[in-house]
Image (cartoon, rainbow, N blue to C red):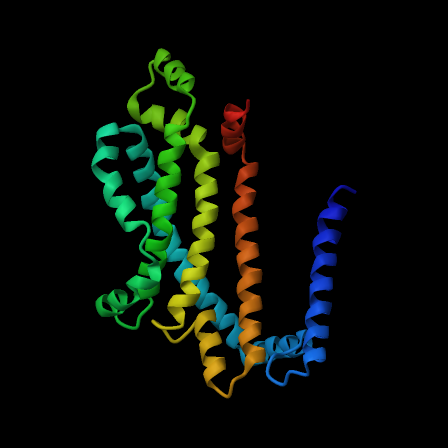
Length: 255
């Protein structure tokens, strides 16, 4: 029974917003901005033509590669920087210089280096994701309880075992928070990159629909799909918090 409000409350808010959207368009008598029914028809049109699934797969493909590479590099790098003080002092200034640069600013260079191919948005997604993950992993090590390290050393654990059995599990909750933030940024960046650097994906759908006869029903349909997929990706990452290894980290940081 407790799960019922978790479903009904968001559903009720969504219905209220859809109703307000429909009434707002009708009151303004807008011929350009679509109603929810127009957007639904646009989504069905894209499904019939086979474009919607094609564009969703293209966007997810790019996010999977770019974000996956960011996780594989950012998490170990962050743990090393958090553990070794000299490595942190050497590399942290470089990271803090590169981190504030918007991934959108890299688009001209990405096109110059990789051309109009999938490699360009993958590179941009990687840049957008790797810095939040690295910073979160580094901060997780800095905030870890020292008692865990002392206890592990008393049991004679080596450096590799210490990282694998103690440091990494203790840091997982904060790392997952960084991964969730980075995934949201990656999904934003892929849409922006697809508007410029490639000719497929949900971002391309939006810009193409606007240019091809100002099909704003398809524009908003693309926006709706971006939001729904972003919600699904966030829920998927949150499921990782249910694993015992992650719960161990949460228990360790409890006051």
